[in-house]
Length: 465
Image (cartoon, rainbow, N blue to C red; front, side, top):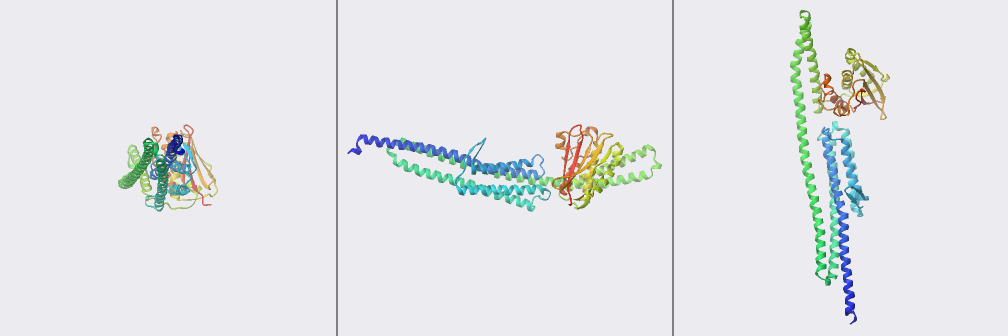
């Protein structure tokens, strides 16, 4: 019969050969497509968790007082997590590769929910950072913070799971089609079958490697979180122990120091019975004792702040009155060094919301520094202005040597004393205490300075109206 003739057989063999070649080409194309499509998406899904987890860990370090962590880097990691999520939705490209947009509506919805969780986590983190003085471990906002991060991890895990399910479904459909084509082309020989089995094996190997990679990364991240949590707990315990030690030692030192000052004051009262050298020695005992008491008080303040034991009595205060009281306290030292104080602060009754004692302590500290670090016959200029957010800014400018960028970066670190070469008295914690006290009063402090051009320290505090 005609249909079994050699010519026809050649035609069918050629047809089957074309089908086989088409099958091979199709297998290669689909396999490459799956690798190009799913590998970057799997990486992106992992990067979403990695970036957000890094942001979570760094945020905990920053809010615990680690000054090596910049809060902006935390927000940047959250932005990177959101970028990878949006790249999975809409496509994108960076130095790590190209990401094709997903078409599965269910998976796209899960990614959109993940982005929403990132936004919620960012908002709670921002609120916790703003209220960090009241957001310690165990606080309400700390619990919301952890719950929000756990919720985000659940959605991110859903995205990874759904992505793996889609890949498995596509792989299963592809394997079924392969089997059908393999049966229809089995007459072409063992070579075609071996080729297809090899290709299928490669695809399964890639899938297995991807699954192993996901499991390994997840395990590593979990372990890192556990280690970080333990380290944070130890650091918090060490900080508490340090604060308690400082407080205890300061109290122990204050009792004998008060006795020393008392005896010195008794000697001063009978100064007419002492010669000049003895009177001078008594004066030095009093000066040194008062300096040490001041140091002890500052250490006590720092210990109270770090252990969250310092409270503030917020009330309405006329800022001009507090400024005048502060200026009077440092006026003798300024006169001794021939330093002119120019008060350009608005004399209107600007009323702020603060603790009058703590605010005066902050202003006296800044003004004292302006005297100590100023030059002989220099000036101190006080100014005030309203900022856009209806807060009052008080600026205190001196005509001293000024600060370098490096010195400004170290300015608010505890026990960092600048300009020690000029033997300027100080403990190195006054500005640290000032910054923390202002934070308790919802205030801020900053500095603008250039070397050899003087410095301007400013504080901002909320206006009542």
